[in-house]
Every structure is written in C-alpha cells, then in structure tokens.
Length: 116
Image (cartoon, rainbow, N blue to C red; front, side, top):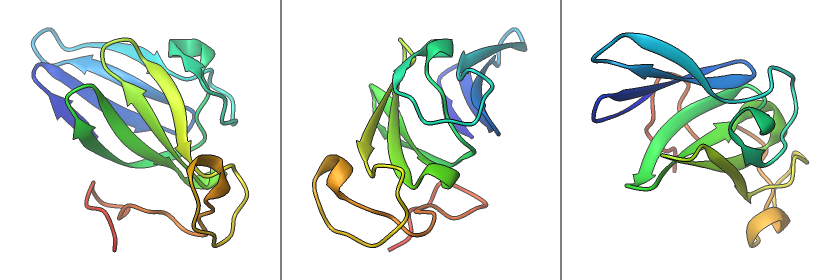
C-alpha cells in the first residue's frame, strides 16, 4: 500500500486499486485481472501479484511483481506501467533494464522497506 495526498494505492493479486480517502471511492487503477506482466496504461496493463510497493519520487511508485521477477514503475497520475528492471526470468544477474534478473522479492512482505 502507498499513500499520496488523498490517494491510497492498494495491491491485489492481478491489479492495483485506487482509494480516494476523502470520498472512500474505490476504483481499479491498473491491471487486466489476469496473471501477466504487460506494460501499458491503466486496465490495459497487467500485473502479477504485486508486492512491496514503495514511492520512488513524485511522479510514480515502484512495485515488485513477485511472480514475474521484475521491478515495475506506475506513474501517478496516468497509470502508465513500465518494466524498469528484470525480464520475468528468475535468476541472479546484474544488468541494465531487462538484462537484470531477480531470484526473490526485493521488498519485505509486510511493507515498503527495500531489502539490501
């Protein structure tokens, strides 16, 4: 979960939801509802079991898609999902962008603190 101003972003197995904390309105922000990792905008993008959301800077959030071994960025506003590291293949490899590989989750299960 991430909070920015009056917006709360919550992860579910195959999408991210946006909660307006002033009105309690809940809407789907990102995700198709199917297990995949496809870049795109809003409900045209797909996410697979996102965990460990953390704010990176004012224009977006980082999240780790647990089952796809990748780090993805979601812009707010706009809901544009972009894979910034990893390619969906589990492993260990330093590299730039999709050349990097991750074996395990990057963020702790219970929050948004990066592991070192």
